[in-house]
Amino acid sequence: MITDLLNSEDIRAPGEQVPPGSSAALIVWEDLWAVPLTAAVRASGGQVAAHERIPADLAEAAVSAVDSAG
Image 1 (cartoon, rainbow, N blue to C red):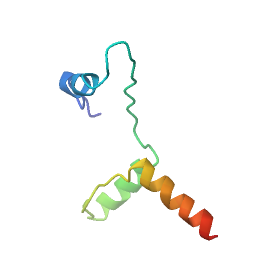
Image 2: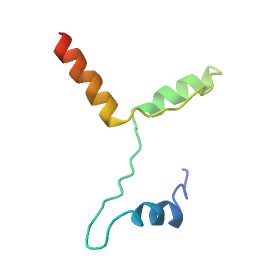
Image 3: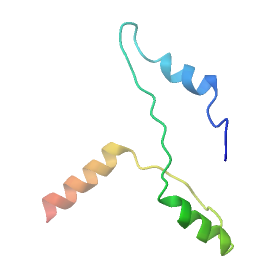
Image 4: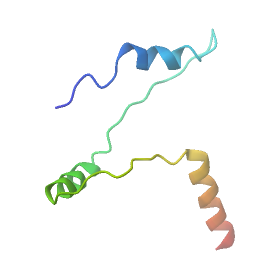
């Protein structure tokens, strides 16, 4: 098990962006569906070449474009 992935700075920094009198939530999750895939790739000698996240607004725009074209 991997521990200590978050530290107090990881929590403090976003919290400083929240205006006084406002609230925010910090959500952390693990994509468990990827665990068997990752294990299989590593077992076959594969390596991560890139790890990127697509911003939600870009993903939503792409879905909208496909829906409009469809």
